[in-house]
Length: 138
Image (cartoon, one colour):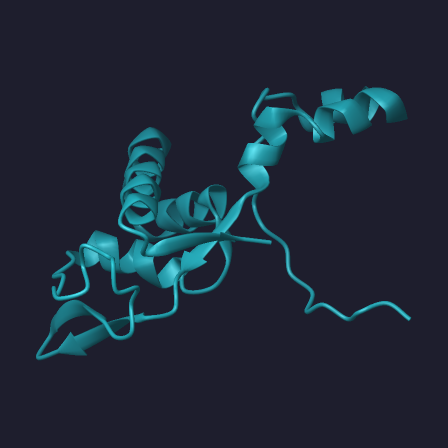
């Protein structure tokens, strides 16, 4: 018997920007090669906030508090004060999400260009991975 997994789907940007019609015309071999390409696999990566960090709203302001974060983390004795955009991105990474998931949701929420939202999310992910706040998940 197979293990049951909760149904989910994620947005994955088409790294080579092929149209849906172009993808549909690929042979099975070509599509398989494309789906196994580095660009496509990179887009499929999902991330989530690591256990040990909580986001709290106190008197209308948000703070991120490390509670049981890795003892060697440079943030173990700090409290972070994110702005509204950072809170939005943080909340979307509380569950496993791709970069594209958060970019799409951000564009639905804010009056922002795709390029600017993408840069913001990419910067958040880069910084959060460096500070060991975010982890890559399956």
